[in-house]
Length: 228
Ligand code: HEM
Image (cartoon, rainbow, N blue to C red; front, side):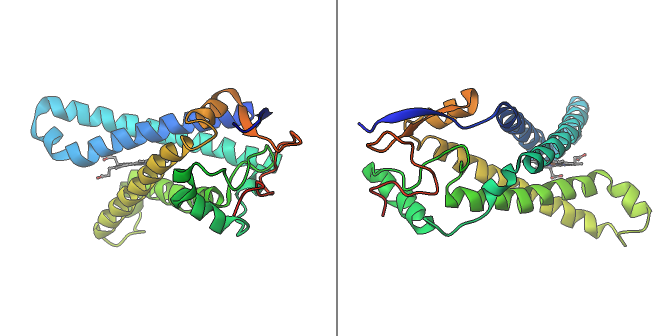
């Protein structure tokens, strides 16, 4: 059994942001897909109509909360310099792909180790960056275009209602992408030192990290001795 050391990885704000975001995304996905798949059923009966209105209001209120949270998170990332955690790197990228596809099933050690200054492995950097600069902005922008569609359309920005169909399709597609990410993310949280060590770290801030023989935690920028 490899030696481990407790390392403080996630700050209070980071953990608050992570779990609040998780709750809001699950809530937005739930209300959004209730609207998407339930629209016809809801509209067909009087009791359903008030449920439909409630889902829409809930979705919109959570969307505003999500935007406020995103604003705080952007501010925090730039003030603390944490945005650098997402800078993509090719270093150990192939090693990570091999680990997730082969090594993990052979109980091989993780090719890169986590530290407070380098929390994400090269694959996580790419996935999280894509989420932050592509999927979430598309979701939020299409959501607001949807929300303010009547005002914008009346203002003459869109020539006809055909644009609404495109906005709904883009919003729904981005929602599916975010949910796909969430499933992958939840599965990968179980692949840490123990199945729950990553989740516990996001609750307490502290994580058990494997150390070298000299008991020094291995920095994420450094490959573990046995990495390929
Ligand atoms: C700031 C973020 C967001 C905004 C402003 C927003 C806004 C909206 C609006 C205005 C609607 C139309 C509701 C209605 O019929 O009145 C909607 C529908 C929907 N939203 Fe969002 N939303 C956001 C985030 C999300 C997220 C994170 C998800 C899922 C992960 C999501 C999934 C959906 C889905 C599936 C629909 C139904 C689309 C349809 O068939 O009409 N939304 N959203």
